[in-house]
Length: 395
Image (cartoon, rainbow, N blue to C red; front, top):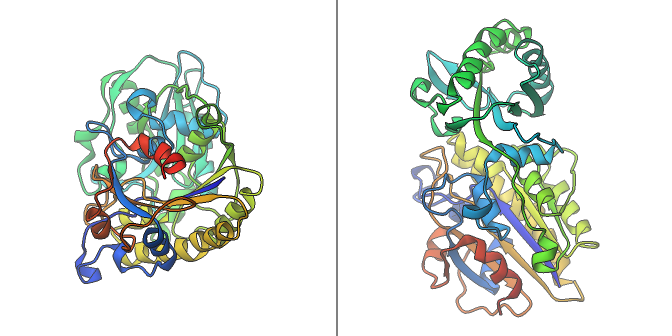
């Protein structure tokens, strides 16, 4: 049997005035997602356990069938796995964002979605001025980078996208080792302010990278292979390191797509084509698209609707066509990992809609794929990590 999963990151939302009281999922023209829910099963799933942060790391770990309460060690280790970093026993790894802080207020968690080329040059400068035997910075994509620290820490940190418009002084690292982290954040201000890249960004009216922001710390987790648990060989298609890292840790292939940016301008069609091709030599393929989440963080409902429509047209549609012509049995599932309401510009713990269609998936009630329709369903999965077993096995 062939399986496909499409994750429009952060797609779930609340009714919005800008969309005439509809959610982006309800407002978007998504006939192929609707066809999945109307020809199969529609329900709600809680992907984030109580008392855990509703990040994509926790949520997608759950979607892939792994209990976050048991396996989650932090966001940064997943991104380190994506880069193939091997951590020493005494090393902690942190997510290192470039952010824009103005008068102590977090104005932008992404430094204006700084380009990867610009960010790489800034990372080089940080390694030159702040790096050493105990501290090392590793370049990533756009504003998303990593830092390793050879020092025992027990700190609480806060994602920068959770404190937009708020003073950062109340959200600096706290706990054992926090002095080192706070000092690095503070020292980065002068180093970055003097860099010519930021001078040019200011001249162009773009948000400069004023600081680094350290969060999501942890040590490398040990996850049992997906093939050992479910007997299936998998592949992931994503532009986001944490998803790529999760895939590698469970033994999946990671398929690179040119032009996949992790933003609203990503190569949707390229992802769709790659997913169809991947099904030729994999049992299960998961396509993750960050664009809806990024639009919600920008409080842009129209951009979120557009992203959902692009996902439906260029990813869900070709996958559905391919599977329907598949001589063997097949199933497809679509679901967000977590809600990202445009009104809040950050993630929430609420359950998300999911739809499953394909071989031996009976249709009981025909409803479109959106939050309101899914909430009317009797199908509810409270332990999100049990959804994978349901998707693969339930009739």
